[in-house]
Length: 95
Image (cartoon, rainbow, N blue to C red; front, side, top):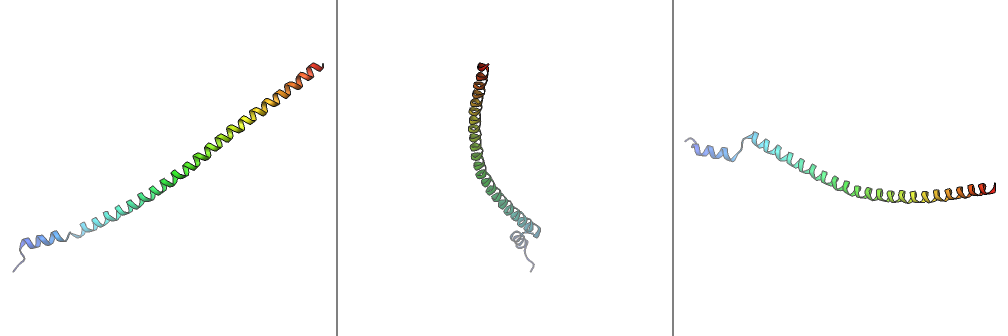
């Protein structure tokens, strides 16, 4: 007796054709690779954020140091100018 049409239809539904199975497998592998790549990118983003915070702190310290140095140089400039004017006054008064 030959297999009834309903039995062969059930077998087709239970076992997907080979190309569909390969495609499903390929899509699954790709999704796993994409997920792994995204996790790695997230780790790198977090590292970049941590490093950028440290860099910003260093930049701020350098800015403060430059401002302090500028202030000290301005004070020294004023002292030298005062000393130079004093010397000029002494030379002018001595004549």
